[in-house]
Image (cartoon, rainbow, N blue to C red; front, side, top):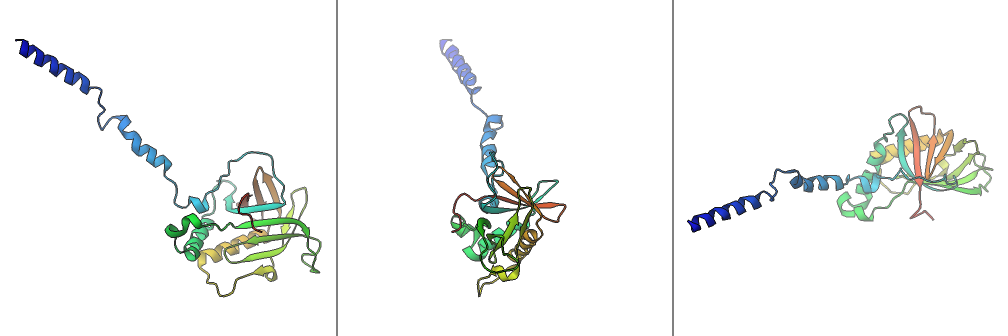
Length: 218
């Protein structure tokens, strides 16, 4: 009788302890996959991702800016071909996305200087110098602006420096054309914190730049 009683007590202890063990179907067992999903990054983020939520006082127009993309004025979505061009350039020149991702550093910058154009040139005389880069080449030309927000860029072909012997693929060429035309048709600008918005003769999109604070072009 004592032995049977002891056995029953042992069974009760076993079942009472088993209630504290989580089963695979309980919510806490699902936390692992949820955390992995939240921390998974978009594969394009290192070359296409920008932090556009920073706050602060507007910074001066004169300085170095990195091109983010063409933003739709109503939806806030970015035109996808800028990112496509970045990924294409990475694969084209850096030996593959997976192989050289950590080494990739190719900012599409816009450098606005407070130095006046010194050469005798009808298009740029009396205007400020600029330098900007696409995946195809570098533009050394000029721009003008006023404190009311008007701005204009010179993007004539003679001011471009294209490397010789290079190959061109469609996404890079398409981005170069869109970017150049955006600057050529620019009419106004706006600065919000560390972001520069350039408006051109499109009712749908604006060009978005972010302050380039590291790896600045020399």
